[in-house]
View 1 (cartoon, chains in turn blue, red):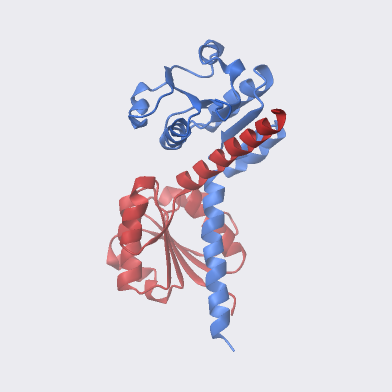
View 2 (spheres, chains in turn cyan, yellow; view 1 turned 60 degrees about the vertical axis):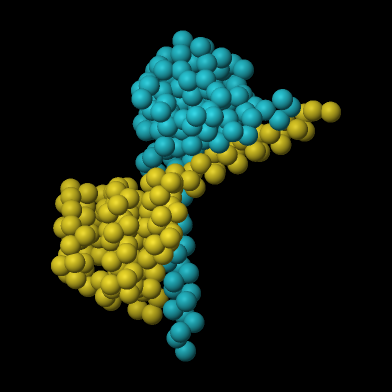
Length: 146
Length: 146
């Protein structure tokens, strides 16, 4: 139990369900919130956490998830605005120590950071990986030239 | 010119346009292909490459993009199947030295790799970043305990 955290994930899409499955598998207590119950079908059969069907921007839903006990909070819905809003509620109202939000639009990353929300932007991370492939190609070309 | 590569990008969504803008800005010759002309509006005003509106699974469209001269090929549409197909054509038929495809569904990564296509899956990369946040939180907790 010492190594187990209480983790709340808002959004059960591709990323949210992958995180929920992996974190539950290694023994963490996981609660997933999504307003579309159908998304819970992506949770694996051995997922031992809780599913809450509801709108996470409603404080009542977050209270149902016992948010004040959470160690970690992930906002990974498909909407940047929802992620920003719930991440702020988690951080500022429920004082969760570790809050992380996904941002789709790289131009919004700065706004999130100004509001004190730590973000991960898979598009930017992906772009960097593609760009480093170009850099390595350039290096290879350099080898060929005199 | 020595440091300039000829780069073809299929898919002008958030990732494709970001790559096209950045690569064009640093002096590479970039061609972007998308079947939805509206996506080209995400290209910045200083984008100096070419836009081709068409279905990249059609060889004629790839020939129009002078694919055989390309140094690097990125398949970053929103459809995994399209990315796989065009990446294979680029690699096997046009012999492009560096071919990279985005995969959305992490379960498909293995299939792509078996077919010899190098992939980048932003979902998986993002998941790893979220998971490492959990790991660092655990480490912090460990410090508090006796």
